[in-house]
Every structure is written in structure tokens, then in C-alpha cells.
Image (cartoon, rainbow, N blue to C red; front, side, top):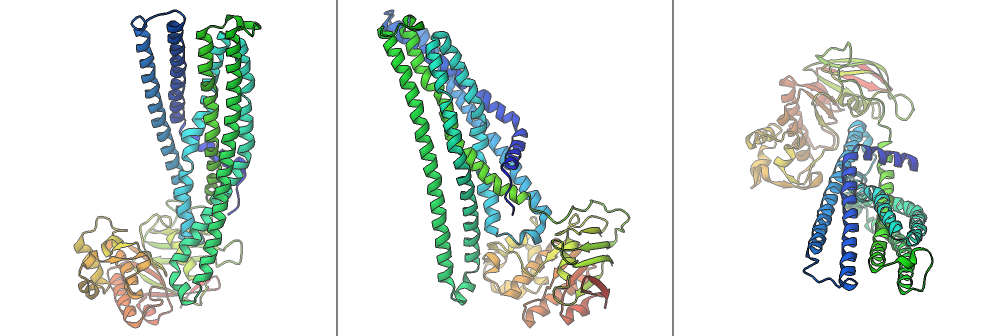
Length: 557
């Protein structure tokens, strides 16, 4: 996958933000309420101290002011609660939108295109990369606005109290954003390397685990362990580098904020003692001086918080680069229309279809083909001749370079169909769990009947737990023939009108072949439309029509 430009990543993140502006605005409003409540709280606190120390007021006299202080604290707490809630809702919506985009891309790309990507990489993009967007939308984006609103309100109040102290704050404020940007430029690159490394590590680890038996047979487990160790160590170094940048940037920003607050404190202290008589210093009181001192940390706090969340931005840019690279991967042509024009709806029709991969020699050239509903059609021919590609076109897994395909009058993939590829798909769970992947509402009786139709009745009876017997991922616990028939049982259970099969008897022993043939014969007798690729003579005899696919052409046998 090509690495997207930074401008494209920012544009994609901005697009996600535009769709959820109301939640971002709500977060900013709640945060601004917290900031204003904080200013009022500090003003009340300074006023109470001034009244007690300077004016000599007693506690009962100031009771209403204490009540106001407690009420302000409650408002501030409620504001923080709403801010967190709105931020979480915004992040939830954004991550949902991002996953919808990834899902649409996976659907448009199809299983053929996705087969080139590791399952670990795809899972990492779906889970961790999308989750990395949380901090950017929940914390960084709202904090950008709050870093302007709250300090500006404090600055206006400080200028009103003492314009010289306001100048000190105004001159020191730009130091934090400047150093935040300088550190952040390096953090973005480090975070992108972090996501790239963990994606590769996830994919390689999953591949090694799935192929552990093969590695043991060929005595390659030591080499695989060394490869994973090397990748893990690389990931460790990248992670430590990311943490180093984060801690370094936080230390630098805290230093400059502390220095600025110290300068304000020195000015207020010497002004109150009378050592500074320039400008408004002579008018300083305990109230104004204490309020300025209390507001100085709050002036820098939004900027410091933004600097802390700046790493959320770097993480989002790194994750966004990986996600956008996936979304930018070509999906092999434009999807067909929902209702192809001028095509019959009683079968499968291909008109002037041409297919090639990456601009190479056409696998299928100017193909015209019609398959009537309810017929069993066998595709045969030399390996690499285009049989699987033709099935993938009918299934809608890939799109032709040109031409039109109709499946019962609809675009490929729009009409439900049964698919049995050369490699099945199973999950860790029971037989019933695996069959309910395509028929969630199927009853136990229907599942047992489907299993018996594919010749698994005797195996079912030999299991103590019946259809609730457990199997592992990739069909572990079943023989190759049993796993293939379990996949075929899904097709019986779902009752599809169209069934596409790619080498349904490949790699099976003689007994399993016979049972699969009997199951397919039952489907043909039931009036299902069967299209399958095969070299098996018994399967060819089952077909109503045999087509030879070779060298970009399809002809009748």
C-alpha cells in the first residue's frame, strides 16, 4: 500500500470531524463553562481571603460568599462531567464512521483482494488503529478551541486588574505552542513508525501461529522464533522512542510554564511589598495580587493540556496513515449497478466481459455467456485458465475491466448465494455456531438435517455433544473431508438459489468425494443453479453443461 501524504491524512480527519461538529461544539461549550466557573471560583477565593485578612470580616458575615464558592465548585464539576460525556460520544461516532469506511472498502474489495493482506494486519487496522483516533477527537480537537477561549478570558481579566501582569502572561504564552509544534513534528513520524511496526508484527505473529504445524514439519520453528524476536525488539525500540519524545516534550513545556508563573509571582510579591512602583504596581491589593497568582496557573493549564494531547494528534496521524492507505487501495473496478440494463432475470448473463489483473494479459476477453436458472454448469480446463476468476466475477468478489454481469437480473453480490471455496472458513466454537454464521435463526433440528444431507450423520452420532461439539479455528478437530462437508451444510441450511463452488472435491479422499458428490446431486435435483470448477470426471458427469475455460476464452465441451 502506498503511503498517503500528510495533507490527505489531515483532510480525512477533518472530514470525520465535520460529520460530528455538534458533539465537538458541545464538548467545547462544556469545557468553556468549566473554565468560566474556574475563574469565578478563583475570584471568590481571593475575595474571601482579602475580606478575612485585610478587612477583618468574620465567617458568619461571609457565609453567602462561601455558599457561592461551593455552588461554583458544583457547576465546575457538572461541566467536567458533561465535557467528558460529550467527548466520549464524539469519539464513539467518529470511530463508528471510520469503521464503516473500512467495512465498505472491504466489501468493495472482496475476499480476493483482501487475501493479499494478513488477517493480523486487517484486525489491527479495524481495532487498534481506529481506537487510536479516540484521543484526537475526544481531547485534542476540543482542547484547541479551549486553549484560546479560556486563556483569552483570563487574559482580559488580568489586564483589567493589572496590565503589566497581563503583558507578562501575553509574552510567555507563545512559548508553549512553539515548543509543542517543534516537538510534535518529530512525534508524528515516530507514531507512524510505531503503527507500521505493530501492524507487521501482528500479521507475522498470526501467520506463524496458523502455520505452526507446517513450520514444525520442516523444522523452521527456530528461524520463525528469531524473526519474531527481531520484530518484537524493533517494536520495543520504537515504543521506547515514542515514550522518550512524550516525556521530553512534557518536561520542556512544564519548565516554561513554571518559569512564567514564577515571574508573575515575583512581580506580585515585590509589588505588594512596595519594591516595584512602576505602572499599576502601586495599586496592587491582596485581592488583585492573589487573584492574578491564582489565575496564572489556570492561564497556562489549557495550553499545557493541549500539549499533552498533542501526542493524541500524532497518534491519530500515524493511525490515519495506515487506515487511509487501506482505503486508497484500488478495489478492481467500479461496482456494477443494482439492476443491469437489458439483461434477463432468469439466470446468469455476461456480456462482453473482459478481465485482467494489473493491466496484464486478459484472463477473460470479450466473454459472452448465459447460464439458465436451475442448471448445473461445470467449468473445466487447464490450471490458471481463468475458472476461479470467472467464479469470482459471478460472485461479485472482483469487477470486470468492462462489460456487464447480471445474476438473476441483479448485480453480482446483490442476490444471496452460496459459496464454497478451495479454503473453507470456520470459527472456534460448536458445529451449530459455524452453521449459524449464514443462518442465525436456524433451529437445532434444521442444523441436524443439513448435516445428514451432506453425509455427516454418522459423525454427528459419534459425538457426545452432537451439534454442540466443539471445533477449533480452521476446522481443527475435523478431517479435511468433514470440514468441507460442514461448509457445504451451510449451503443446505441457507437454501440459496445460486451456488458457486471452486474445486469442491479438491484434496479429498475417495469416501469424502463420494459424499460431496451425493450432496451436490441433491442440490441439483432441488433445482438450484450450480456453477462449479473441477477436473473431477464424476463432477463433470453431474453437470448439465460443461464449459472449457482456457486462455481467456470459454467454449462448450
